[in-house]
Amino acid sequence: MVSGGEPDEQARVSRLEFRSRAIDIGTELTFVHSELHTEVSARSHEGGWSGALVKLTRRLGEPT
Image (cartoon, rainbow, N blue to C red; front, side):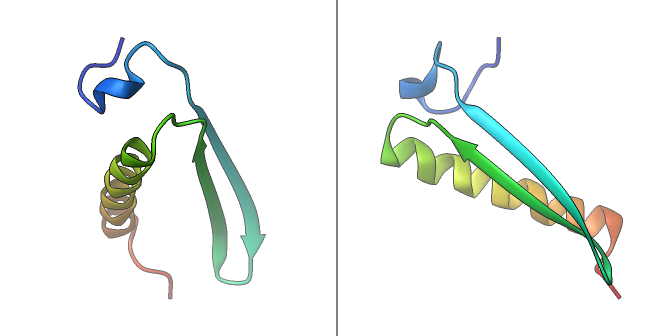
């Protein structure tokens, strides 16, 4: 069980999709988090995922 997050989402299931595709400069990642139950929750998750993806980009490095 995960703690934290929006109270409206506790004990509910959402869907995460990750798709990768080879492109000329590396790999394109498409990330979709769906089946969130409120707009507030969707915005909160968007902010959290954006921050996580920025950290991942820093860790892996910018494309050249």
